[in-house]
Amino acid sequence: MHNNTLKHRFGLRPPLDAQSSACLCICFANCCTNQLHFVRRLAMRYNSLVGRLENVKESVLSLLPNREKVFHLIWDTLEGPLDPELHEFLLSNVELYGSWKEKHRSNGNPAYKGWVYKQRKQGHWLYWYKNGKVHKDVFYRNNEYHGVCEVHKTDGSYEVCEYYKGKLNGERLRYNSEGILFQKWRYEMGESKDFEGPVELGLYKNGPEL
Image 1: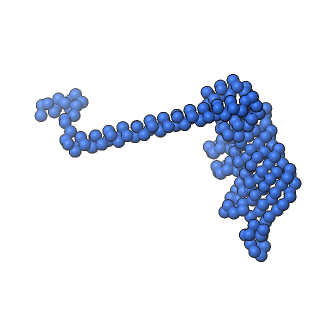
Image 2 (image 1 turned 180 degrees about the vertical axis):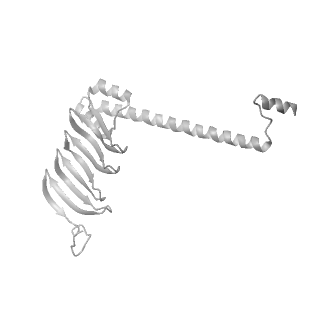
Image 3 (image 1 turned 180 degrees about the horizontal axis):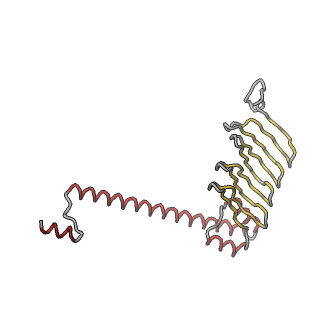
């Protein structure tokens, strides 16, 4: 009794029984396992990042000395702000490549993000509605749509269009809120060359409007 009293007085506990010892060992093992998983996730993330940086560097070097192709690689496929190491690498090889722009609304939802070069929008841009849903998923060349662009409406319907230097060039596809294609155009440099509606697309036999 005297020994136990002294142990409590100096902050020591009496020996644990077998059941308590087993529970403590299990808790310790779980803690170590969780920490191990966390470290492994960090390592995988780090290795993935390093591998991605090396892939980007290799791609850039393979495209040089064509700086324009390097710009398009950055603007179309990378999201900023870039990793400091990659940023310095690009500056040393292609000099200035533009700046990353993004904005959030007062409610915390994103408003837009994308690249700007010489005060013109370039490459991949995303826009959101106030509620956080995607509004536009588009590509730019010098402030003009260029490539495949998606525009989503608040009712859930959307369009997928192909552009070349700001002009419709290729397919223009219109989908309803259920994701069903119900109108299709074909354009050549801004001029409509062909159209298929719900009937032509096989949605209706008697031709009522969708």
